[in-house]
Length: 174
Image 1 (tube, rainbow, N blue to C red):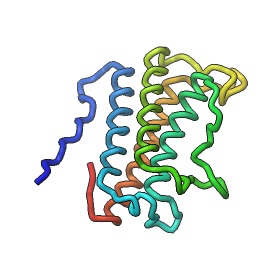
Image 2: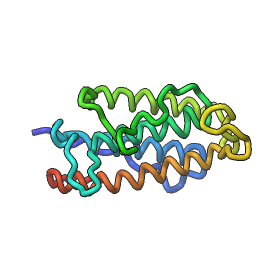
Image 3: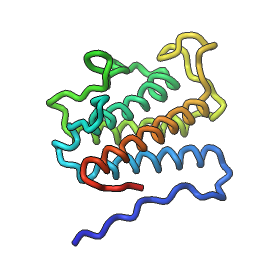
């Protein structure tokens, strides 16, 4: 019998450092995403159980690109060849038939590591650099705003994934 791995706890309720709180919750949600996908067979990762038609694998790829669009291309103004690489026909989330969970997981982990570096090197009240997603200083959001935006994306989509996982195999996540 396999002993379940205890999920990491939320950041402490006594934490008062905004940077540590934001980074801690972001890592907490990233880990929750991986846990919620763990154990789903390939067919379950690619199947939609909802009228909207999205699949767990598509949601996974989407959250990778949320980080790319907002932190890599957005805040750091890095050259990103396909910032909308999670989009397919009709502007829907898309995963190619040749893309595997293992490949997407590796890309997600690399993306998260680069995101951590970007956040560690910048002040929370700093604004996104011009030249990437944002071309004019007036449209550039602050890093703290971007981090809150990314956190709400994770929270909302993890709730969606909770429902899909329960429908798929009865697993109720944390």
